[in-house]
Length: 128
Image (tube, rainbow, N blue to C red; front, side, top):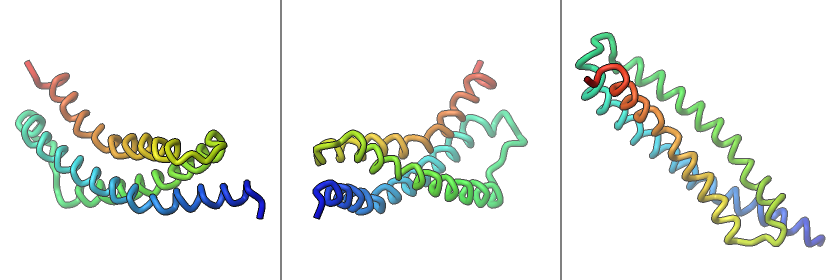
């Protein structure tokens, strides 16, 4: 069997084996980020903006939106093996692990932009 074909199969297999860990990280990050959003909104925004609310409807809409974002994140997950195959010519496990870690932590950090924006909104609109 061709050595390139074997290394390509190994790469794709490695990335597919790590997809569940990636998705679990996204789900946990989304839940924790939403809890942070709810707490920060309650403390920082709701005392000043009486129209701001978190209701069952808004939770449902945000949950559906986040599931869509997980789907988009999984599409971008395919960049991992593509970058791996393009730049990791020797099939280095260390390269693969570091590439996964960079993508994982970037993806897990993204949901926390929303609670960060709540803090930013507080300081720009309400803090005196």
